[in-house]
Amino acid sequence: MKTLAILVSIAAITMFMVSGCGGSSSSPAADVPVIPATGSISVSITDDPWHEAQAMVLHITGMDFGHANGDVTHFDMPGGPISVDMMQLQNGVAQGLMSGMEIPAGQYDWMRLQLDLGQSYMDDMGTGGRHNFQMGANAANGLEVHEPFQIQQGLHSEFMLDFDVRQGVQHRHMGMMGDQYELHSALRLVHMDDAGGLSGMVDPALIDINHPDCDPANGGNWVYLFPGDATAPDDIAETETDGVPGPIAADRVEMDPATGDHGYHFGFLPAGSYRVAFTCSGIWDEAGDDDYPTDPDGLFDFQMFSDPIDIIAGQMHRQDL
Image (cartoon, rainbow, N blue to C red; front, side, top):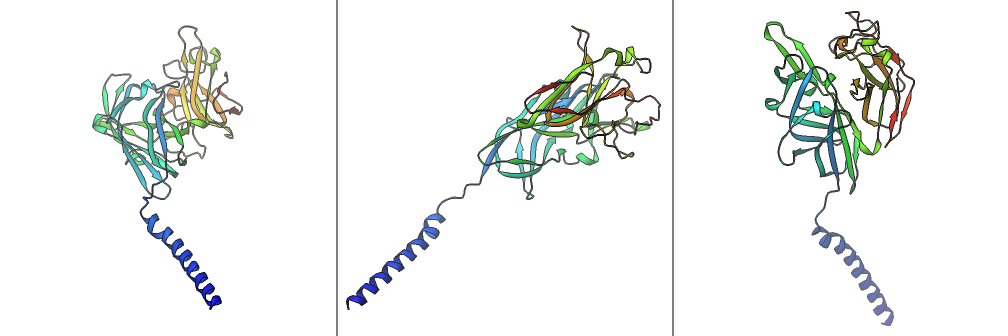
């Protein structure tokens, strides 16, 4: 009888333990809400210069973030839509779009700016006329940048959108229908933890008014930025027909009125290797044509192409041309 009592006690304890384990995983846990893993994100926007626009205003209503699993997270602009004059965001100047927004953690494939075209416009530098925009084929749903990025749980990520206006606005002459200005998704995405910069002076002998082979018309002096493994420079073209990729970005060379020096500036570059090319005939590089190495007008060319330059995060590298 004593042996039987011991066996019954062991069986009862075992049943209690099994019952207890089962209860702790099903009943109490079921009452605990599942909190999705999130991180936070801040996004700003900056611009490359453009010689055709006096003002170029984007009326931004919201942003979309495309998760790798297909989900899309949408935010309206905090405080309501904002109008951003891209011509004021040059040489390292940026405009904050959103700050510290909570977003599901994970891998993302793209970002998109939502625009109100009715309140977006460009003021022409030459005529002073105001032009409205249409969305180009690659921007039908907004201005998108398709570059992967990671949002980590509990951490903050800060990004810069760099809009190359010269490539992002395409001017088409429509004959009797007038001119048409299309917006295209010419955006680069830079994680600010990985951002450096590149700037320098340009030899006065290369500047158009001092160079016998250059057109002295305003808007000619530009520095083009290429990956470090590029073997040759190339022009800006809507469609590449020569198999050579065009520039990552382009910066207009401007003179400092106080010193007379001519300089260029690329901010917010991901750390890595780059090369730069200088042209004093950039006004003849038309986005609708392949203008290099055989320019239909016979006027566009590059005067120099640098060796590879290493850009380090958190540092502004100086490279005189």
